[in-house]
Image 1 (cartoon, rainbow, N blue to C red):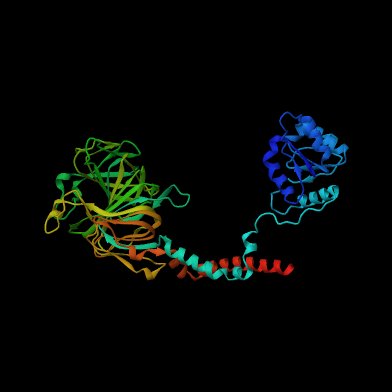
Image 2: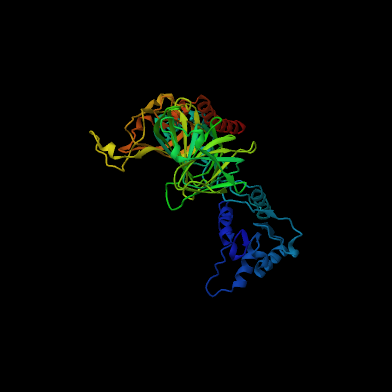
Length: 529
C-alpha cells in the first residue's frame, strides 16, 4: 500500500523518476513504477494500488493527454476525491478534467526551490494527513558553503591570479618603423569596409610611361622635331627642326608596340611641373617603388627619380598643362596625317592642348603599370604617398653581379638589403620596450601586418633614397638571416595594464565590485536569518 499513486505516460518516465524520488525523500511511499508481479493482471494491479493510495497525482503532458490509461486513472482518482493534477509542459488538459485547478511544474528541478512544488506538498499533506519530513535536498551551492568573510577578501586572491595570467599572456604591440631605402614593395591591405585605396597624386618634372597599352589626348596643335637635327651639347632641337603636323581626328592615340618591350613615352612639362593624378589600387594589389640612377643635364642639372609599379591598375590621368613635350619610342601614333619620320625610332613632339580639359589618359597593359616620375634634386623632398594601409612590407632587391665583389659572398639574383642607411623599430605606446635597430645590410621584411599604415613615403633631400615611416602591429619581422631578435621587447598583457592607468583602474574596479557585491549579498542573507 502506498501513500501516493502517480499516473503518467511511459514516455514521460525520465521526468517522473526524479519527481517520484523527490516525494519519497519527504517520507511518503510512492507507487509509480508499474512493476506488475509475474502472472498478475495489469488492470487489477493498477486498480488495487489506486484504490489503496491516499492521493493520486496525474501527470498531464503532450503524451499523457492522448493516453486512454492515464485518462481512465484520472477519472477513477477524481471519483474517489484524491485527484491532484500537475502539468509538465504546455499541453491542454482533456475537457473532463478542466474543472479542477492544477499545479504547473514545467520548470521544476529536483533540489531547487519551486513555488508549484511547495504547494503540491501542502495538497498532499492535506489528503494524507501526515506532514512531510523537513529535509534539505541536494548539496548547498558553493556560495552558501563559503563563509562571507572569505568572499569579501577574494579580490586580493583574484587579483594575484589575474596578475599571474597577465604575465604569461603575450600580446602584439604597435610598432613604428622609420628607415631609408632604395626600394619598397608592399601589398595594399583592406581599410575598414573599403575594397580599394587611392595612392595620392604627386608633382614631377617629367613622367616616363612604360608597359602601357594606349595613351590618348585631344591636341589643338602638334609639332614633331627632326631627330637628325638634335643638338647634343645644348640638349635641345633648334627652331628649324620643328615641323607642324596635320591632325586627322580630334583625338590622338599612341599605341604600344606589343611585339617589343621597348615601347616608351615621356611627358615633360613646358609651362611648369606635371601633375600626376591619384592612382586607385585594389586591396591585395602589389606596389613597388624604386629609386633610379641620377642623370646629369646641362640645363636642369642633377635630377632624381623613382619607378612606380602597380599591378592591376587599368588607367591613370596626367595633367601636363596646356603645352608639353612628348617623347616616344617604338610606338604607333594614330590621328596624324603624313608623319615624315619612322615611328619605331625615338621622336619628340610639342603638344598644345585646349584650355579645358588639358588631360592625358593612359591605359595600362594587363600585367602592371609602370610610371617613372623624375624630380629636380632637392625639390622632391616632400611626402610622395601617405596613409596607405598595407599587409606586407619588403625592403629587399635582387643582387647584381656588382654585389658579389668584396668580402660579401652574394650570388646574382639573390635577395639583398635595399636599405641605404640604418633604421629603427620603436614602440610608441610603450617606450619601456626600447628600440630595435635595423642595420643597413639587413634584408628586412615585415609580414602579417594588422592595421598597419604607411604614414609617409618621401624622397630624401640628399638623394640617398626613399624615406618611409609606418605605424601598426607587425606580427613577424624577418631578415635574410632569420628573425630580428625582438623577444626582449615582447609585450605582456600585464605591461599593457601597468602602462595604461585607465585600463588598470577599470579592471581593478570590476574585480572588486563583483566579489564585494557577492560577499555583501551573503552577509545580507545571513542577517535576514
